[in-house]
Length: 167
Image (cartoon, rainbow, N blue to C red; front, top):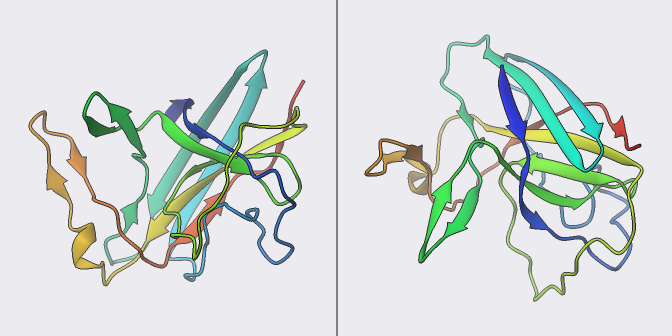
């Protein structure tokens, strides 16, 4: 079981409305790949000013899967990839969506702002990529032994928890 005492990587939400055709909000991750043979179970708990996410993921198939479970966090002049981090965007229903997933590059410049209001719900999504993996996604090992993947664009399936009420 992986605990994610969420270190907010990007507490950013659009000031505009959400896209009606995306279940992950206008600026959230996209999940366009079919689900691989796997099991996912997650629990989101909100207490005071803290969100805790616990999840289990099991690959039940024969092919390798790449979990996007280490978002990049600014660290000095570089980036560190941390398992306890998550991206935060506005969910399609107006709640907060915590994601460890790939995000597409916008077609145009976007204007971002901090959360303009309190949210009533929080949910968590984990991105999973199936082969063939883009070359830019070939994992590499950092000096401290951490396995990371560079920025990439790939189809992913999003496994998501149920929403948890805030308060």
